[in-house]
Image (cartoon, rainbow, N blue to C red; front, side, top):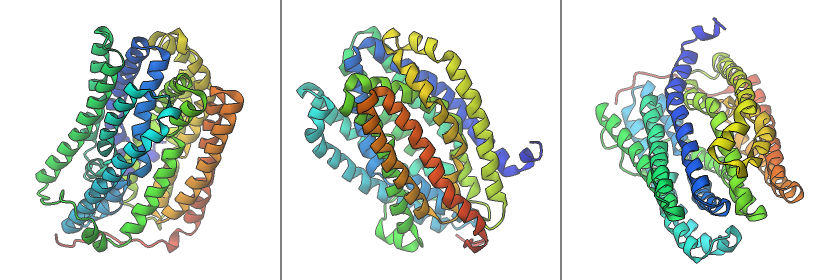
Length: 445
């Protein structure tokens, strides 16, 4: 282990993960407070309705949006390393244009699709219009260029500040809604406002950091012109978009599917379990966010990035085992305290999903390693196979076993995802000498 931590890249990954971890711990507690107030301030049916509306908007944005932060890291990080400022501007302009285009399509598509799904989602006329209003938040949810900029310039501390701000606003508004008995309307306005302010803060941080580095005129959307200047950019964005859309169908749409199959109350229980899963899986997410920019600075033809991925995976897996044990001990009293006894069934779902926490942590470096090796299409195939299997299992097991079946399906989906991704990672490692790598040069801006 001492030899592991002598690697400067691993130390940087851990440092940046610590920045994000400090805000995520606070954010997780604040999100639990917000969910607690919502769960206690409304009936289980109304709480489930709030979850369904929020999940619908997020699912639409996740399904349609491009992973522009990955584009910025994939092409912008090497450009900065080689001091090619003009290419960095082109990457940001292209990324910004994709955000605007996908956000526009997403909000229009979400609003047009909602009337067709309102009955299945259990929305009456009043809640339907609130859900329609919530859809206007979709463009803010779909934009990820600013977080890509902050990752590329190694400003994870600013990302940490933003990640703490949104849950703080949500928790503060939820406490006020609960104490003043504002009901469903108060909670949905609170969740809407916190997301809007949080998304705006990302853009402000990114623009300020670009000005500080004298990188001007970057946040001007130029879609086709900038895209032609970046070799392989369109292939990358479409492949990662399809992969993430499939991921969205598997994860973000899970709560919506559970609501459609089993009703809003079951969706509320599943949302609580997913919230615990997201909180306990935070260490892997934090390491992944700092792992991808670092691995893009290394030569994929050597063993170093692959060993870095293995060490990061083992480190995250060890943390996952510890976290799973803590959740088993504290999960039931915590749910009872935070949400109330009527939501204790969510603990049974969490216990089923604990193995998925460890599995997902072990497999987190695979996506970044495949992108580094230029194997994004292999990742797309793996995601497609795993997600199709998961969606089928989710519907079948939910109908057969109820909400517990949804938890078993989620566990199976995580295992299949890691397994299917590991096969192309192993193949890419064995053929690493064939990977094209451009050594950073001292090119002028």
